[in-house]
Image (cartoon, rainbow, N blue to C red; front, side, top):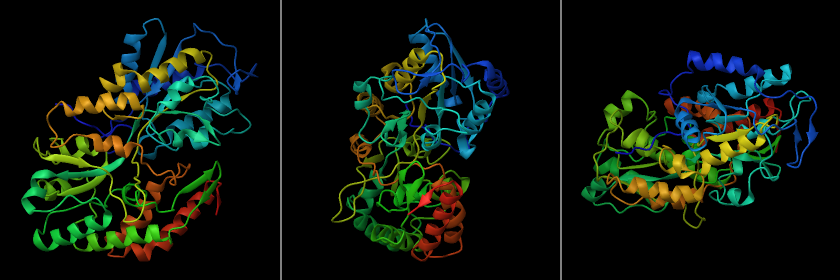
Length: 455
């Protein structure tokens, strides 16, 4: 049976970088062309002399090794060296650190890089220490316009800086509403369509079925599930070095107020969904759960987690606030970059286009929801054919185009800020409404440390 996995995300179960992979990265110091002899090419960025027969070096995390394998099988004529690294997992920042090393050395850049992070375009699109930006501009003719236009609406926003596209999204992690259809029917509740109805069910559950839950806030990405979906203006990245932060708005207040009620009545616990505690306490007890597409396999259809039986798990479109337009958040999704230093841009582009759009990988092999719309529709049909789900999965298709663009992808990590500032506050019994000013201050301080002008 096919299972969603947490594609493009970080997590405690991610395998560490292999010794062989680490050694291979070191060896790539002589891989790509140096910075000398460049000229602005037809794609709008400086290019070294091109060699269509030059091998390309591709960096992938262990979960994307199958993407490289699929490409090799479909393109045996392209010479490719595959290096496994950690994908910048868990905020390691290894991608950026290694590129900075190569910038200083003046050589060694890989031709293609996969990253589990969505904020890498913020730095990879900018010059570093006088060196040209690592990321190649993709919408200047390198990647066909028809291909770019076929990605799910808004999915390339994290890759777009000052109107130019610098990466392709591998997968999306749009937030939808997961639910246990059997429990919902048993309790006699109607599936909520608004956050107000969701809160009302949470209050009923606390009184009528204590011990059951409708969500969780114990993970660092809780803000992306609830506050991003609620259009909270906590992360308005408006340029390469500008950000607007305002957590005192009604949109932020309404989310915090709702969560304060549900946290205190026990239906939205401050427990990470990836802990043994969560599995022990809430197996068979999850009635509703707002969360990303990858929750299906990482949590529900996973023998190591909640292991929900077939025929019970359903998914509905993102909840909306009454009187507001539909919107949702995003919790992850990987990105592919082409190096502007590559000696073989033709092969590098061929690789990233294949792994993001080709059925051979995105439909037949990829574990996560494809960002490329034509592949996403086929991928959903494949998951539905498993017979595991209690509903169809079209709600994920709806959610994919509703990711709110008011939450940006800056260099700094919103997840790290939340984990340091808000998670401990919740554990100490503080109200989120009262903590909003402190959260805002923490975001502003971190943004300024990273060189942002804060509005």
